[in-house]
Image (cartoon, rainbow, N blue to C red; front, side, top):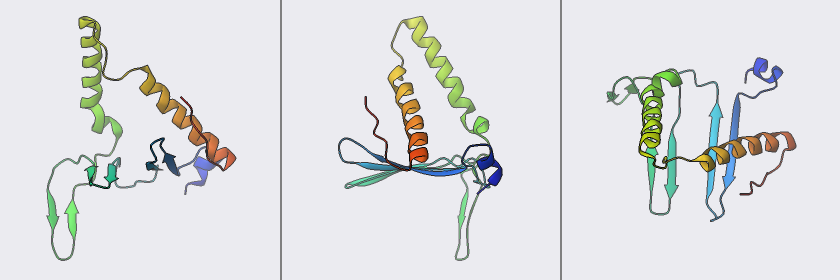
Length: 134
């Protein structure tokens, strides 16, 4: 979409397809071109229902009428969106150190996300699926 990003050796729009060991499939859609704000959503669909988490907005007001659906745009930048979450993570980490307890997120969680990123890049380069092993 943006030639300058391609010239810098990066991409601005991507779709990652995931196949899990249990047979489930997932997709991750990424774009740097969400001109209306910092858009991150998650939707999980299953045979017995679905879960959806939307974008936080400055207000929760949504106006629906015969012509339009109107609402605030998502918060513009990730710092606005995650400031409280980053603070909560740091507080929890400090608490775990003080109380000598295990954090809810460990090294494996970080490792697998990095492996997924590298596998996505390799898949883009090769033009084929890449298997991630434990």
